[in-house]
Image (cartoon, rainbow, N blue to C red):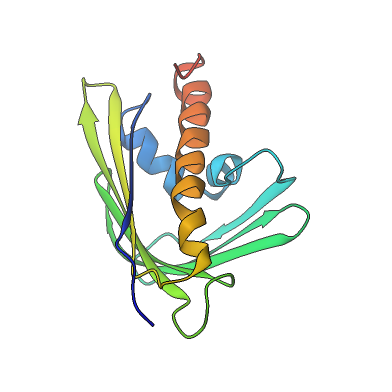
Length: 153
């Protein structure tokens, strides 16, 4: 099955890299922001945050959206790379790869860059840019509240 170009999303987030990295490594934190919209009732997250460790994220709504994967690389406060397995992508190409990097900006902010590659030519590809964009926006709001206690704008 042919592959599509990587999906890339970037944002500047209102917290330093250590806080943004921590949001990706803590299941309680991730359950607060790892979803693309308010139509989801809740998110369940299980993490074994180490290279070779696995994760499972279930976005609960009208239907459950299950995502899982394995951590391929972890560089504290700098980079996380993991497989992303979604039951909504066609077999046998249901395993894709996500790389998230964290770069300090102005001392107290972080430029996050998320790249999702190995995606097949499939209708789900067209939903991923918006989904990841909304997830990163939710992360920004979460960090603004938990890190600064203020408004994300």
